[in-house]
Length: 514
Image 1 (cartoon, one colour):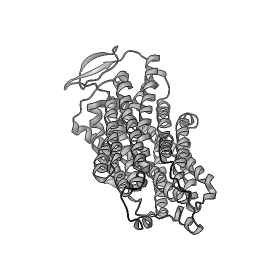
Image 2: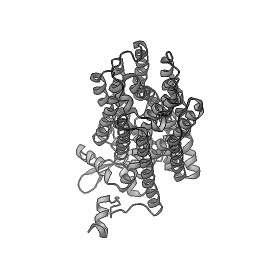
Image 3: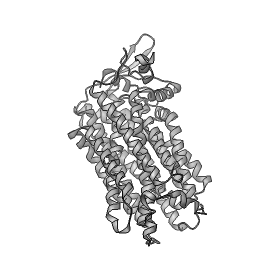
Image 4: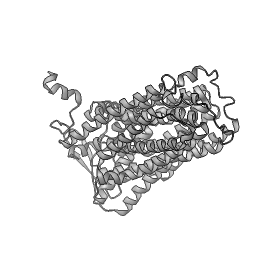
């Protein structure tokens, strides 16, 4: 990492205390330095290299944050998976609104939240916002789902940006303490986090399957009806033939209230865990050399300016793919293949298989990256997705092929583990010192991928959706490969001050730009 890039990382507002000044360990010393225009507070760090207490504290915080997110997303993911089934049109609209609000949030809120609340309390407050959407499930109508969905969407970007900032910063600190490679440590921490996170598919589906176990009906479809499943499935026709969008009679009230109560307790508990047990980043901020007080406007401009970074432009298609592939599996694969071919009572079990494979691979890819490098892991994820997509085109779901439903779900879980762990870690590596702006952009473009999936849910058929999948995975991998090739050649061009030259200025400097 270049010296300038390290300096850029020192301006992160997440490392400030409540007074807006840099806070470090009690052993840190402070001195004033005249930079010609004002006095800047500089931290003189004592040598803490190899401090076992700090190493244990860092790992403890990684595990606690992972546990808190497990509780929160066991609740939210399970409710989100059921929206189109138990709340029908109102539920689908609320999911779309969530991701639209998330896009707006990515542009404006993460840097502001982290600056004022710091990473710890940003996570805690945003988790409470998620709880309001869970509470709305007690009376799920547009009047309750839309306001709470908007609140959840606005809180999502600060939540994920603060989590990513925290893991990246403590990972960097741990690497300094132990003398290990920073990229390997950061990737390992994201792998641990997503091991916990992806397990939410298991716990959430176990809860919902247990509550909804009564009334699971076996499907007896004719061969002609089964031909309309899979690649030929078209939700638009089923929507036109459906005359009711209400929630009455879909599931008994006692089942709805039981699930909502369990999930609401989980969501609230996640916030309590963060407040009580997570240390503020200031405890590990001894590696910060100075602070920079930026205005709110400057922070917003920094978020938008990050979109001019050449690497950000190249990684956008792969980031959108991350949202598209998750949305496709959770909504379209379950509806067009599992529900249509096996029956809705099997959806929970297939999702558990997906979640188990996703979770196990999330933690396995950190040592794999250390062993073989990043490029082979990304390539493996793309090859697996290509293989599954081709299978989805030519295979027709049938109750006799039960094993295939689970195999495809497991393989999709393996590839999803690649994208969730490695794209997150990749952002931290290629955008050093720009954690808030970079991860805010990550959530922005991933959310656009979700919006594409949910907005198209009842508008186009599965065959068109699979074409969309192919477009984004191909363009995404092309952009990623360009970044890797450029890094092998020495990285991006920089100006005299060591700053990366934005794409618009690069174009002007070429002969074609004159």
